Each structure stands twice: as structure tokens, then as C-alpha cells.
Length: 253
Length: 325
Picture 1: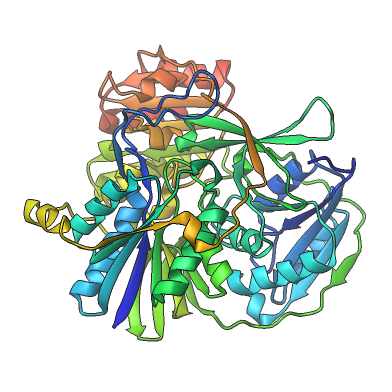
Picture 2: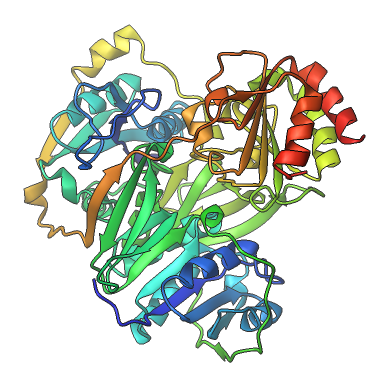
């Protein structure tokens, strides 16, 4: 039976149109709908399915950030996770993927999970780094962008990875870190009774300062700006008209 | 971070043990903006031909070769281990890899083991006015915002968005030296079982000059096949929106968008794709975009160079006929 740790991030709802602050200091996250990062939801779902199949006995979720993360963790508990850990911090600016991986490493050392499941990327920073970094820092195996997972025994798993040229199958020794791709599963919705039950589930808050980590960042963001919007919008009336434009004006055929 | 005017750049080559992947050439194009002191690192098995090819590729000044059975499938644990021991013995200011599933898989592990941050998916490199500092631009939020970043790290690690650094025809040079690296060990943390490669006679999606892409408008996997004849007529690669992939119309490696492939062909034809921001993130840098959709209000029309409102199933055969004229 496996113990599973799932790391989740609070992000702006991917269906909300973001607003870049006019002063170039970032993206406005005030008064915007926040959700669990979609890939992390897939990670929770996979952990829950393993528990339901009798392959795992505990699903612990962890999130790092200010107090609003607790709402995100409650949403994860409502989906079915057993307990939650909140690493409380006010210093959002230093939470680069490397620093997140260093924090998660501390939690892994404390919790000793057999398997860590993370989303392959968060849809805000689009970095696609944290899982790989965590596996590296722990010096354990990694399986990224997975589309299927099979538990072979308490010591090994088999995964399919979505790679550019097709699908790759690997076997990993446990403990290991895996990151989810879109086709791994279709996450469930929280039911009302489970949302109520989630309020009673354990949620432990740990202050980042108590983890004895020195976190720095070598990166300076000079500015954040909106991209130049592509001007389009010319409508053509017929296929012949279109092909003529592509052939004679654009010369792309 | 200021650099000497000619910093040492290490590129982790992507290859299949026989040939360099074109993604590596795109990274070389980006690296050329940083320096003309560029080492290509080739790790694989029985991959001497790759090292030879690398040595003759214009822009490369040195080739490092690690040829061992445990590098054959580019398992990230072994590959990172080898690169990190290299970085401990030789000085490099930049470590680059393509922002493909290969580079995205291994490079963050290397960065973490070097205790440095990674910059992902760099799409622009800008020398600052002082000519010493270099700033990098990368997209966030599916390309709806762009960050300009400088790194102060002595080793700057980054993945390169291949579509943002075009390559011209392959240029050869007199072969530079190839140095064989002392071997590391097989960490044995993961094991390759097999790969199911998507067989296709069509051009590679990320390299094709023309891409035809289908969305939910195709209604079924059966009808999605209509796109194949059009792709063959145009010698185009086939792409798909996430909606079409999720619905099972097309395999995952067809996916164009924020979490799929990023493409920038000369011509991108979007068929039955409404234009969710996650999809636009993957194709909006195409030179000419054609949108064909029966919904005149579809957001894709706002960014398309040419839009045509109509039923796909009528338009596709008509388009094929017109192209064959």
C-alpha cells in the first residue's frame, strides 16, 4: 500500500481572461476566480483512484503560499484527499520552481511518501519544472507527462509518457516523482456531502520560516507586459478567393 | 549578470542516436545570439554518427560525446548526472536545451542539481544597452503575458522555444574536435520499456511549412480523417486542438497549444477550431493563419489573416479541388 503526496497550486481560473497590470509589475490576481491548477486536479484524481483500487492507503495534499491556499486545500480535501499541509508564506516573490522544489523536498523527508504526483506545469507560470527539480533534489526517479500509471508492486510502477514522437513506457523504482498530462484521467467534481466533510479533515499549517531553508532567487523580472495582439479579421467569401489570396498575395502555397 | 563577451555555451543535443533532431539546430540559432563559443553535448548509445554530424554543423565549436548503453533512451536521471559532473569540471555560463518533451524532461533536473533556476521556453534574447547584461523574454499564462527576465546565476539554464528561432538551410563546416567524456554510472532509477512511435509520412508538426489543424467541429474521429487528404494535398502536417484530442478525434501528439506543441509555420489552417486562448498560444506566431468555421462569431476569426465562414464538410472537398487546379 502506497502513501501518496500530491502538490497543488492555486492559480487563476484558466478560462478567465487575465489582465496584465499597466505598470508592468505582473498579472492582476485580485478579485479574480482562483482554482486548483488543472494538472494538479488530475494529480489528485489519480491518487484517489489508486486509493479506491486498494493500491494506496493515504493521500496527502500540500500547497505553498499565503492563507488563501487553505481554500484551495479544502477544495482538494473535498475531492477526497485525506489530509492537507499548508506551507504558509508571505514571500510570494521568491517562490520560483526551484524554491518550491526545495520546500517540497522538506515535506517529502518528513512525510516519506512512496509516490509524489504533481501537475506537469501550472497554467500561470507555464514553467514545467517543479516535478523534475524535486526528483533531482531527492535523487529519485522521475516520470514526466504521464498518460497512464500502473502500480506493479510496493517498489515499482510502470508509466506511459506523452512524448513528442509518441508514447514512451518506463518502469520506475519507488519512491519516485511523476507529473501528469491531460489524458491521464478526467477529474471528478466534489459532491456537497464531501464538501461538508472536508471541513472536518485535518489541515496542518506550517510556517515556511520553521523549515530552516535559505531561499533565494537568481532571477529578476524586469517587466511583465501584454503581447502585441495579432491583427486579423479579413473575411473571404469563397474557397476560390481564399486560394487566390494564399497563392498570389501571400505566396504560401 | 555580466559576462565576458564570449561566454561558453553548452547545448544538450536532442537526437535519436542516428541524427541530430532539428530542435537542436533551433537551439544553436538561439545560442549564436549569446556567443560563438558553443559546445554540443551528445549523450546516447552507438551515436557516433550524431557526434560526427554535430561536429560538421555550422556554429558548433566543440563536441562532447558520452556513448553508453544507459544513455540510449535519454533517461533523465542518468543524463542529468552526466551533465552535472561535466558542469562541475568545466566552466559554462549557459546551458541550453530545446523546449521539447526531451528538453523539458531533463533540463530542470540539471538546473536543480546545480542549485540554479531554469528559464523555460525562451522566445527572445535581448542584449541590454550596456551590452553585457542579457535579458530573456518568455511567455506566461499561455502567452497572454510576456516576462522579461535577467538571471544573476553563474550558470544560466534555459529551454529554448524552437519556433521562435528559425533556422536556414543546413550549413556545414569543417568538422570540429569531438571529445569523449569519462563515463558516469547507471543510476538504475528508471528503466526504458518501449516507445510507441506515431508513424507518419507527413512532415513533423513543429517543422512543417504548412499545418492543417482540426477542432471539435469535426464531430467524430471518423470525420476527422477528412483532414488527411487536405494535408496530403498541401504536404502539410496535421495538428489538433485540445478539444479534438480530449474528444478522441486525434492522438495527443497532434495537440497544438499551451500544453501541447508550439508551431509557427508559414501557413496554419484552423478548421472547426473556435480559438480558445490555450490553442492560440500554440499557433499565433504563424505567418498566415486561415480560419474556417461555421460560427461567424468564433474568436479565431479575430486573429486569423483570412477567415471563411462555412461548413467544414463542404469546404474541405472544395478546397482540395481548388488546390489541385
